[in-house]
Image (cartoon, rainbow, N blue to C red; front, side, top):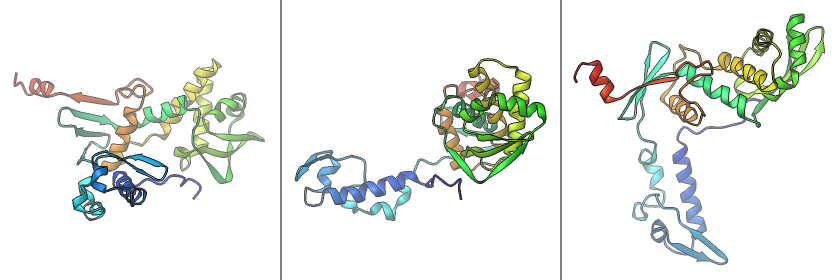
Length: 261
């Protein structure tokens, strides 16, 4: 499938440690004990010096005990609670957080489109035709370089039609025609401003229409990944329109709400 360019493992830490142990066993064969490596000692082979990485299973447990007890090397337990088909509640033990996952995903996509100079795209097997009104066609044609800069590879086909050849990966299974019409509408309403303002406007429009919708139930793994990406954003607390992505409650907040102090 053209869009399947990345494979994600359900337990990436398990895969990492498994590969680490295999490489360790091979590289240090005949150069010293695994126990010495556990202490972070350096062992030298012919023309080779390697510093061991601490943190793998103890030597006495067997080199591949990880295969028998993968749960020991998994991430700490994480669970979330869906509220009203629009919010997710979770806690780190210190704070209770209510997450608007559509707003959070919107922020992630917005910053990815606005700030990245290396947007990963997926090409369609057959280019898709997008027919616009004459006014929409004209405004997109005037800003086609800016549209291409955010990962939408398209060319004029004539008669108010564009041929779309590739899009950012997260747009591959969306209604690209509707997204381009929404971009045209936002450009018409926003006027002809500076390039950066135009790109910002386009990024905001695409993020809004591409973010995961309320009612879509996320798994705990998906929530964890969403939170990881949100933390890497420049402004993780607000969506592109300024609404909060999450609200946090400390124990003191909760005590006051329950009139316990």
